[in-house]
Amino acid sequence: MKQIRFPADFLWGAATASYQIEGAWDEDGKGESIWDTISHSKGKVANGDTGDVACDHYHRYKEDVALMKQLELPAYRFSIAWPRIFPEGRGRINKQGLDFYHGLIDELLANSIEPVVTMYHWDLPSALQKDGGWENRRIIDWFTDYAQVLFDNFGDRVKYWTTFNEPAVFTLRFYTSGVHFDRKDRRAGFLASHHVNCAHAKTIQAYRQSKFNNGSIGMTLNLGHVYPKTNSEHDRAAARTVDTVLNRWYLDPVLKASYPEEVLDYLAREYDLKIAAADYTLLKDNPMDFLGINMYSCFRPFVNSPDEVNNVEAIMRNMSSCRNENAQYTEKGWEICPEALYDLLLRVDGDYNHPVIYITENGMACKDTDVRDGVVQDDDRIRYLSDHFKAAHAAIAQGVKLKGYFVWSLLDNFEWLDGYAMRFGLLRMNYKTQVRSFKKSAFWYRDVIQKNGI
Ligand code: GBH
Image (cartoon, rainbow, N blue to C red):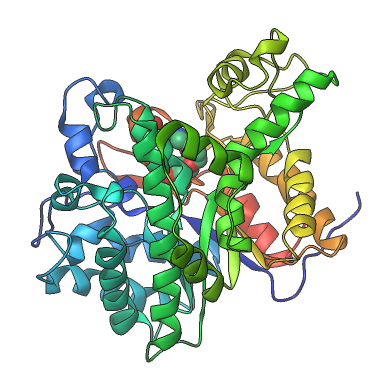
């Protein structure tokens, strides 16, 4: 079989997020987050699961770093829990929260593992949610103040920052699911996503002016390449609509300092929302260094009748109920579509002037029920990762500036509304005993890292 090799400086890693692994939800002065609220309300998360204990990473981080070391991981992407640093979201700083991340970062560096920090992976301090959360424009300053504290405390050692993980999820999705915030408010979702972009730009400005500004800073988006289900004119129109709403609405502001015209027209018409000229200047004056992409699957929109072409809701509904007969699906019900990673990378490269890109998440939920000699035989996960790595490699060969790749996830963890039912880890979690063990995919990934290829 043909060997493939990645560029010498390619950064391999694994990713996690604070609420999904830390536990210790009310320890050492941590404030409550919206995910504490969501998981503690009855009937929201599958099986009544909560992140109260999760992987107990807060107490076991040294053990986890030792496991990363055994995996020979060059880099580790994790997120910082805002309510550990500011229990009320702003104002008073909780020193014990800072100490936890000092300990983690030092432990990583002592083991030669590069820390890659996400400042926000969905666990907003509840106190800020009460004051309007991302809908309230004042959050631009609340976030920037929080980010400044992170730069001041950790910037001497952290060289890779991302402001946000997947704005599409924590703005429009959380505001329209009806579950997360007990309401459906699309206008608030759009407004929130604009505030996120402003907070991102102001944070970049703060980073450039901070004492330790010799690293790079970006944002992570969840993107999916869009293929019309059939080649009909109407399905192609539906594909453009889905691409505009799910991809371009997030890509354009951070890579072009603009928004898609179609969406702006819609917002003005439906909600009387207008973006201020000064906000465009803010975005334009503060470009980021790299784009993080979380990629899991692709989208195949279609319409049942021509009058659905401009009905975003109908198109999304069709899309989520449609199975592609020729494809395989993961435990999450996501189509496995590695070629979509290649197409997505080339598209972003071509349409956005060749940005530096990291795959900040890619991975697969599996049943993980086949165990031999204590090792989960997750050959399906190995195949998934291997096919996606090959797609990434092919994109690099075409000149795409892809600089690194992070597998989701280091270990099985709290999968949001699905609780612990979905397993994405390279490491198996036994939640009763808190014992972690390497799956077959972990050994395989170590081999990829050692060879810097497949
Ligand atoms: C990523 O999102 C996330 O960054 C990561 O935290 C997650 O564990 C991983 O995927 C695997 O799913 O309604 O609150 O349950 C990928 C896209 C879209 C997946 C929203 C989860 C439901 C969130 N995500 N989705 S929730």
